[in-house]
Length: 601
Picture 1 (cartoon, helix red, strand yellow):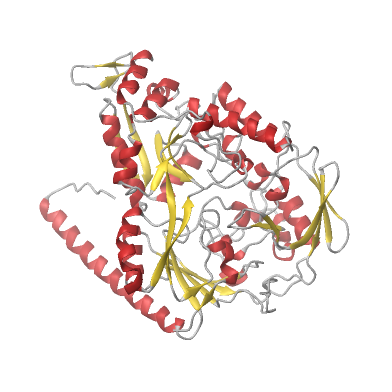
Picture 2: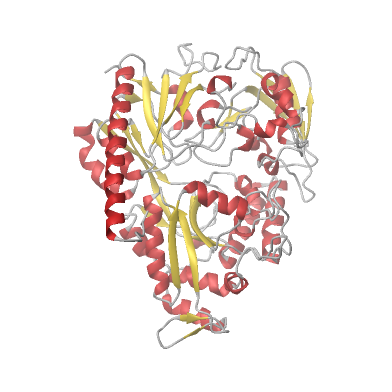
């Protein structure tokens, strides 16, 4: 983060000395903590990884961030193979799909248990879907994934017997089986909170299993339980003694007894911690930074680790403008009306896209370890539309950018500054999360590129938590540089493309419990994309599905609600002592965590 120092020199000097002392103390504490866990590692098979910040919830129903604790603690009826993307049995050992494609009957494994030893049954599945995910009183984004058809109807769920449960959809719904990988919740631990209201008349479940909850009170079904959490320092996961999976020799999984996730709020510090041996993996929940790859590749043998590559990442990296034309209840516009007119002009967004030099971005920031990105759908998906197949692209062309701006009524003054038709200087704020140094570097280049066409960008990296609060709650932002996770099934992004979805970031509707938004407008192309996603989910013929999703990609690239930048290579550095890691862009390192082992030191 770039700090602006204000005030007199002596005040700055005092702050600097205090900061240096705090930094030294922090380093000493981290070194002490690392030594403590190294000592424990000699006694207990464990892996030490890292994350950039504290997570927002311990309740799976309210999770909207990646990474999260549920990668290790939660499991659904089915799972997705991180290498092939094939659907595989998880809590359900098998399923039968009816001839009309509207009914799926699952058979649960025999003898399943929760981490507290309580039986995991069909009643838990029924509770999870009927009483939580489909409960209108509980604001969970998972409900968007279960909406079916144009009317957004939900499936019905019926208990067949002690081991079988039946889901019936109002019409064929192609992604439905994959959707059912969401985590199952323990009825015996959470039912009372769902059906008991607080003083405000809301279910107590809304405040249940927050990050202040004692981890020992969390009941889970994944390979690990959360043993402890020290805010700002670490999460410690312990092997779930009741996890259902076994290896080929009949040994219960997971093999690794403990997983320590250190909270390291800087990618620079993460690199230092890995090189010093305090971390066993780097890039395990995303990807190595390109500059880290260049350095670490030379140290593989000496550092006793290997860099695994997983192909292009499945997520997206983008710049997006706040297109919301709504107002707060007191009449205050969410976005300055002058700037809102710019942002909602298609030619303005297209000009910005042409002005960003992606080749320079890839060469300088990504060190060549990326490719231009043009679609919201991951390249690994069979529904991805490539530029060769007709997808519109925005190769670097500042002259074309200027032409588009002038056609839209913008003009240049004698200082080559861009003005709108009313003479207002074109200037806006760009936000990103300061913890991610790669994004900070990208934002700096975007600022520079747009300055070349007369636009002044005030670039302000801030904490990730503040970015999320602005996007989801206050809606107080103009332009943001962020990323989204991707995958194989396009419908997983329905809550982003559905105009009423909980993650429709660029034109966010009111969130549950938030004040209403007055005067929010949804454009025709937004509606069309949302309707096409509904049609794509209804269509069972894969060729026809591809045509539908191809059209959505063409519309997004024409209207640019997201200006996509670059698709980075997925890479992770992994200690040789950790065996069985199968790192992929689809599953990163966590998807087969139960099978991984640690060699004795």
